[in-house]
Image (cartoon, rainbow, N blue to C red; front, side, top):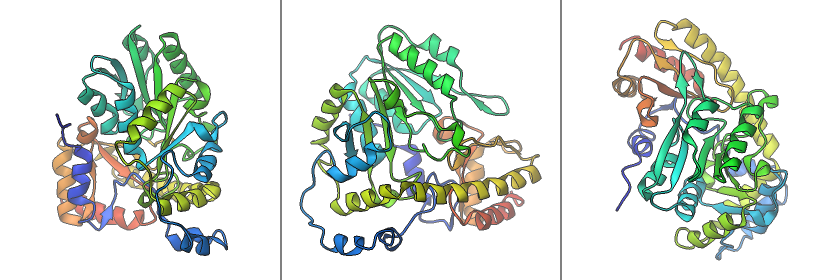
Length: 369
């Protein structure tokens, strides 16, 4: 049985490359190959000399080493490289879960975090964030949902699509709850290192709990989605082995040029992340002004981390129609919150340099709707 359509990706397929401005993009400003190899004088020749044979199924040793350096308690052989974060999510869920397993998923969320366990036949409880002029997540709701047979808790912080960030105390208490019931934890951390205030950065989940798995990717913080490189990091040998065996049935191994460039980029990961953080902070200031000017139309809660936010529409109850009208009138792509089970909201992406032009086009179209 096939899973239902991935609604967000179908929306992107229809509009991402047919609109001039992507005002709902979830990634940050990208880099060119020329910009990357300029970081290291010998990189250009090394790329030209790269052997295009099969690569190691777990990921190139040098790349796994650079990924492991992101964490505090992860060794190179506890990193498993995938083709993007989506493959890692699919592999994790299918390697660890069976029909009937109880799974708790923080929502709203990236659709596959919820839909893959549902498709497997799991008993899924939504750990629902609340909205009251701003987004929040409550530990008491997790305490009510978790039970002795809970197999997995899925968490996401920094959060897509709201820009919410857990506190350190909240994160540790949530992990302790999972530990108490013997549940594994899957941490979607693809926006880690994009905290607007570095003091808000959380420890990686895989560093705090030996049955936790952290998800990372080159696409978001580092602005390199075209490399299609993601990974999981875990101290859980059973999880690692099960995923490695299942990956043999998916991509098997990754692109050699992509792994080469990802390794190079991660050697300069602070430089890449800081460039995108500068863009995010500058654009956030612009969004503060924009939403203050249009407070009659939107409820704006400033996000804490990442390049995305989920403001609420005041004057337009049907966000889906509103977004399609903006696409039609201004060639500005907006994503409706219904694609994250958050109707009445829209996702704004502000990790790219052309946000001022996109906002101008959006504002012109909005005044006509």
